[in-house]
Length: 543
Picture (cartoon, rainbow, N blue to C red):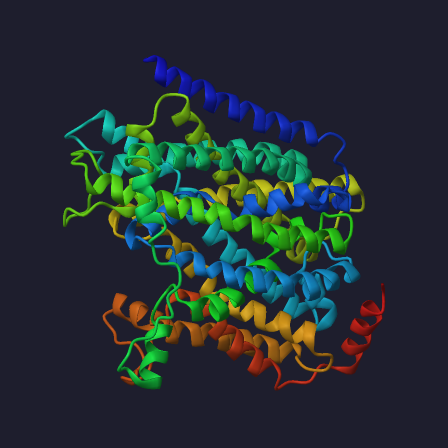
């Protein structure tokens, strides 16, 4: 083993030891449900901020966003930050105060008070299934590095799909088990404090990567020609298309100003206001004001991070545009695979030690997003389903044991989804990561957001039966407008529903908006029973 590889191994082992040690240390004395799920609502705002960032920046972002920069050669993906910030203001002003007033552990308890148990369980089920699929897909991403290491070590004899699958399986199991250990024992407190370490490692890894890449494309004078001149804003309109032609054109594009102001705002309202995974760490802050502050500042902190990862992708296109590396991962047409350009650069161009730090950054993003998913999935499952099906233990220690069982259960399920995603990706190397991950949310979270909006902004609209019908309508509308119905039908040799030539096929930033509109409009057609209005008014009257 060379000195460089030894340095890499030392850095990675030290990272694992430190993150697990912190997780186990913070788990001391964690014996209550309030402590396990919400950290006793005593977490410092800056730690909550770091945890929100760690939950947002998965390995999908670490490799996927540079892949977007590499493929598009611009910063148009960054436009979506506009919606991220606008939505955070709404979440901080409306959603977070309501959740604090109602004293919820699972945020779907709010819907139970506002509408009834069926709406609560339906919303929780949507979250459980969607988060399981999305986080499982993210779990697969870092295993790309392991497969690439194998291919580099065996030039001319790339790993077969079956070997890739087994390499992936080993990596998934190792990372998931290591993360599940401290998450199961320590709960949300262990998750948040390990997130603090993980976001520090991530930021250092990205900063070093960008600096190292700039020096290898000819220095700042060369780099700035490509970075400062890259397009940031794109209206998505074209001359000569007419009004409806431009509307259709915009709705069929991913990254435009319209998608930033409308599509991205609703995406973030859903992911940061109705997703237990994200909201749960917001609720660990000492009060609603600290929670809101951490939420908004995390959006501002996300701007330089996203600029950094996109810059890495743009400079990778410059670097490999002038290089003839025979080991570069390419598709059947001979084009470089965008998602694999950054990991290939890490493995082949970076020196030992620095390479280990960047790989530790990949692990940090994976473990950070996985630990938050495990804790939130267990919380929603136990609070919204397990206690109802099997009864709630009479002691606090018994309830905490059930939460730990839920954490282990979802660790197994996430590994299963990750393996399935890895197999699909192996068979389809052209797939881009970011649209896959965001697309999973797009089909269902519009329905979730629509019900929450009705519950938060109205007093007398929405009912149990009406909400279920509205959520189903929102899901079916997105299926049709995104063209998913045609894709599913084609799998069985059938045709999808008929579409007029003027009708757009929506790209993923618009799916949640469409689902929200249909769900909200449908739910508003039903009245809330008087008893439910009184229950909600009593809770809302609390300071």
